[in-house]
Length: 477
Image 1 (cartoon, rainbow, N blue to C red):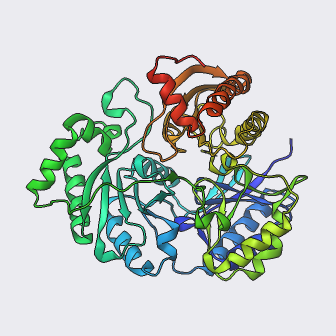
Image 2: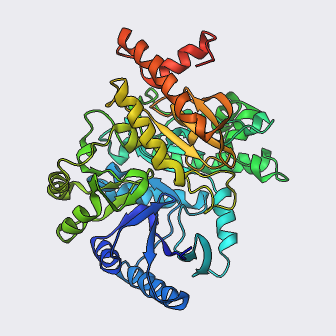
Image 3: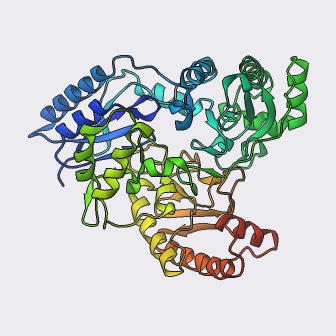
């Protein structure tokens, strides 16, 4: 078997400058792949291992020079805030929140041989990897749409739509995924709304919650240091009372409503700026020549491009004409449903040492099955949120999806369903230990029955329909 070499290069916050894209495309003949939210996997060609490593190091250093002021960012910031008129104020606020967590992505690149690490620019990559999984997850979003899984974060700050920094933010806390593992403190939990605060008060509240977690968490068990465990063991009322004791009182207003969670929503301004990449792959296929189209438009980009959490590309509003040009170039190509845009996976086997099963390797096949099934039952435009994870850690946040698979062992998955498109309800275990070969038929029967139900009630979403069946005791598909 021929050895494959790749450069795994991270981008802070998932942003790539046009010059960086051009450098990548100049260095590779084929396509590349988006992995781990803000990391680009770039294939390396050479006559031997030494040449591949030298090429990878040279390309990584060139990419770093193109953006000399590389900063580590702990807070995921929504695209609309990064592009809005109050951008600088919100990024300054996000910077103040950085001290409550480790960075989301590290400026360390790796060169891999057959997915195994061959070289790392960080002398202690394992320590950074371990810190990444222990960090608090923090996001700053704008209602009514959140990209980064607000309800699965330890701390979430939500800006009222079109809001000015003087209007403050809504604070959510205590969210988290992961499989329960026999402990109520580890059970998945949707973040709770704690009220609306001014920006200084919100920073203070984050400090209070972090201190409470340090004081009343379980120091001997790092897995229970997540804020969700504090809420589970002490209750929401107790947390609110502690905030009041610290002199923090929520301002007037009601909890914000959300229409969607992820990258696709009906009649959304940013949908037209999204370039769909099936399973995060920027490569040409017979039915979708996206790499060729991307090569033709990159020279016309004027602003940074966002690598989205689900492995797609979102262009800046200033480059809307470029986004429209891509759509023209891809006219007649395969139509990608909202499901294929919304779905995502973690790295899984063999790329992740924690994984129990493959996820990214089977993601494209699963998407294809689901699209065929949706088409068969006339549900092509149904925005089902589907996610797959290679282990119970759930880096792709599967337990906040409408339909999800979690790796149990190699080739075997637990199937979950019943979450909401808004991301504010966790899914339920639908079927345990399903072999991959039986997943397609299980999904087909699920969507056959959903199509019948939707024929009677067009308002049904897949997640709400499954949840209703669970409440009525119809747990068998």
